[in-house]
Image (cartoon, rainbow, N blue to C red; front, side, top):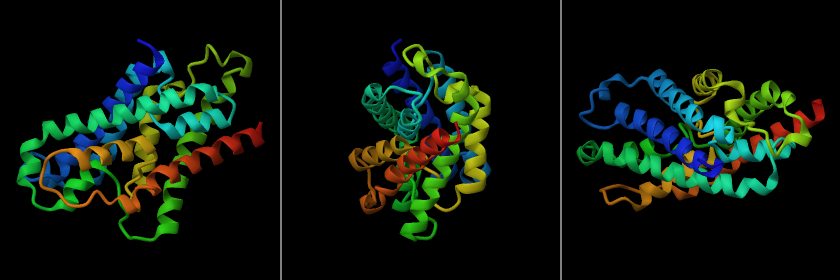
Length: 245
């Protein structure tokens, strides 16, 4: 398995479990529909990260997130030449995972009438629309993700060994990074749904627009925030890491 394939599979797993837990918690006539449990969603995404890291970590370092790839590159811990390939694999993986979740819950999507609930299983949106603060929410959540990964794992990776390095979310271990994502969701995720991952939001949003079902808008006017907010947070984390070295 090559690093690109690992990123594709790892991101597919992450999104399948992440979109799946929101669908299970939101759509009509699922077993978990009545729970309305934010903690269930946070842990579902956290376990999705855990499983994606377990599979991809030994091969690619398990970035499974374009913001992580960009943040590591800014910090000098990942070659810029490999970023496009990783990001492409992550986006395709996110689309694949969300499509598989849609197929799994197909009957429940049909039974659900509210288009906002359907869209909410695929992509994020603001609890209260405030563009500057919504953007900041994604910046700070992703900053914490990338900065913690860099600060814990980055010091052990020598700059002249980048070709052999497997730095990524897997560098701090699958379980710690899963709890990091759960913590971000519980503490910082209530404003925008904490995309903290451009592929996580954009890939499923594209799938929402393409799949044949009764639905409303894919809310493209908002879609730039969960893409550029996380990228900005990742760049800031990488720059601060460089300053602190």
